[in-house]
Image (cartoon, rainbow, N blue to C red; front, side):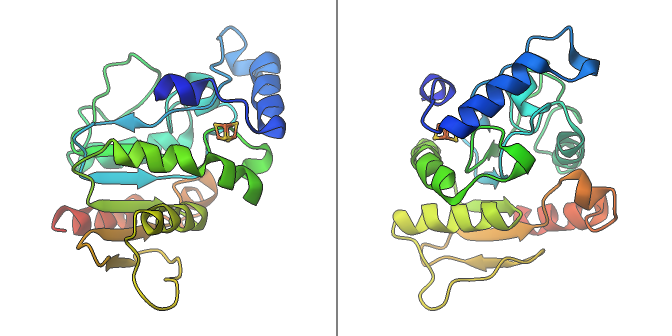
Length: 218
Ligand code: SF4
């Protein structure tokens, strides 16, 4: 499945963009070989917590080939996962750096770095089956933490496709939102761990730690 994801070229705009970024590179990384392909999920196959982001960053996961790895968003996320006991080390630098997650798995509804961090609705629809198929391979999944509104919608859609949907109007995204599904499983949400949020104080480590702490008891 990871190889299938990494080989996908179904979205022409994203394929062009991710490969162009990998070819041109950022000056600071000019000696590196960029991944430049779709990025599979990463984590513990026995995970009970599934973290759902948005898409690889152009010079982060699109460079390193691992979700949230090699950029400030990842620095924030993995440090928090380490404090909460989900990660064996506080940083994620590159594939093969020894990082292991325990009880958590990180994925995204769009596997290719999009221009301006904005996948189109069509691109998200095209990529959605990968999310569903990846979830199906995590037998212990029971808590889903969406980072941002797009991840929130994507995980609700994926769970609805499994037949697990709260009746009535669709829940709205908000930081700290948390609710149970008919199956007993739980969906929670946080502001995305992007620099835009973490550097402006919209999302602080304390706020994110508090969300993770509530999930531990779910
Ligand atoms: S976004 Fe998803 S469906 Fe589109 S090319 Fe990337 S991996 Fe394939």
